[in-house]
Image 1 (cartoon, rainbow, N blue to C red):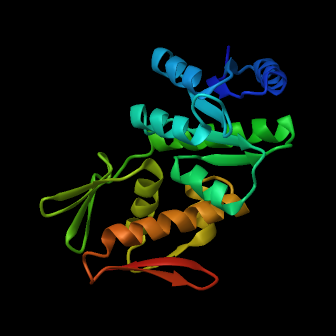
Image 2 (image 1 turned 90 degrees about the vertical axis):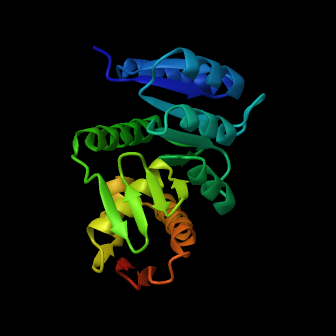
Length: 228
């Protein structure tokens, strides 16, 4: 019995074939495409458990493909594969909805570990009961619809933004430990995931700044605190 279905978008056919064969041997049902346009076409046609996307591809790059995929299914896990390791590219990847980010060259064993970690988190999200809403100052946070509402203004949050804000709300006026948040949402507290969380904290602050009574504080060496 196959573990999960994976859409693998990699324009290097040799590497893509190697990865596809390895993942199939590990009981993942893997479909290989060699450009972003093919990736989007197949995602619309079939059901996948996870997407693994190369960043630099013809027709449509991985970042754009991830945004298109997330627009269809906001909860689909995405792992980026790239030869790039600049911080700006890492940030762009997470802004596009990445759950993890691997820089080439990498070991296939590590890729499988990361796939398993991302899928465990995805399953965990599905079975955990959610509090349907939180009041944050003048804002109502609808966790089920991933909406932040203030008067007649509504902000649609990404899955990561929603998960992080929900953790902050559950620990309102208390310290949300950084490593706890990383392992709860990203599973792994590595450098790239830590930088990703910083990006999302900045975005949440931007959304909430219209109510001056709300603050998300950095607690040095510990984590964050939502005050409202």
